[in-house]
Length: 116
Image 1 (cartoon, rainbow, N blue to C red):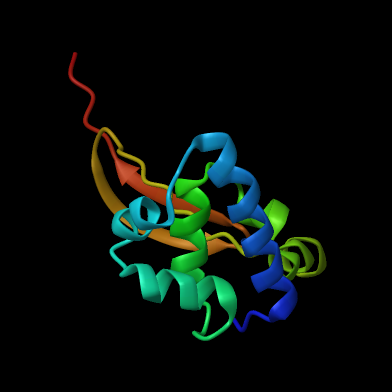
Image 2 (image 1 turned 180 degrees about the horizontal axis):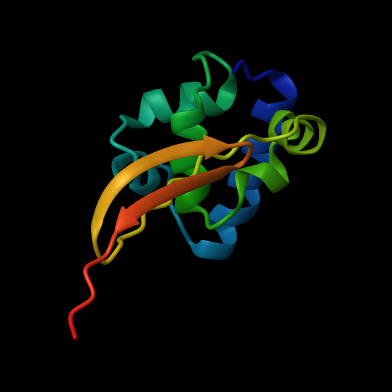
């Protein structure tokens, strides 16, 4: 994803607001992010390309949700249906004989031994 000047301006505004509230210094946050103070400044001022990794880590440090404050991410959250991949497992009391799919269902046939 590419971020634009509007996103950078939003990051800078968040920084200016939160650093005062949280009593943070640029050096302190840069260190937490594993950046030099110069690299941190270049990211906020427009000399370096913004990445999703930086934005996520930066917003986490300032306790803000990037989807609520970064314009490009706000648009993404509203415009695009999201696909979520899930996994489901089950155990059966027996030996699985066959498993197959019918539409949106998984059918598992298994043999269970009943003792008297």
